[in-house]
Image (cartoon, rainbow, N blue to C red; front, side, top):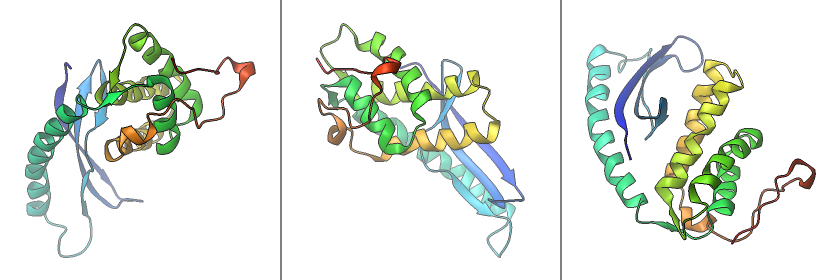
Length: 180
């Protein structure tokens, strides 16, 4: 997997009202969250530059932890890649239209393989971010989608690796897939 590590720092005076520091990977021009962001609220006694620096320094350990976690994901076999992709996408709340577009790419990737793994599936899920840009979603919507995709890091992929697709697939849209 060819990735670059990155840290995103975002501030907001509305909604979050704080500084959010997010560890991320960059892969094929798309950045995706690899762990929970660290947040320092703008108000209260913890709202100091020292606290922000402390959180920034903590992202290094989060990135290292994520690298180890990603290595372990490579060891989790996925026997039913297409149903698992759909089931995970539904579980974490990826919009169906984006998931189906990314699924087509994933199907081509796993077409001639006997097995996939959880890391390949997660990387395939991140492709929804590229399709979101293509659909001209706002930056805010894409940031929300990054967090949605990031939820997949906290689930047990094996629980969703079943031959059945839990997501209702519309036959008239061509979205009927069958496990091998």
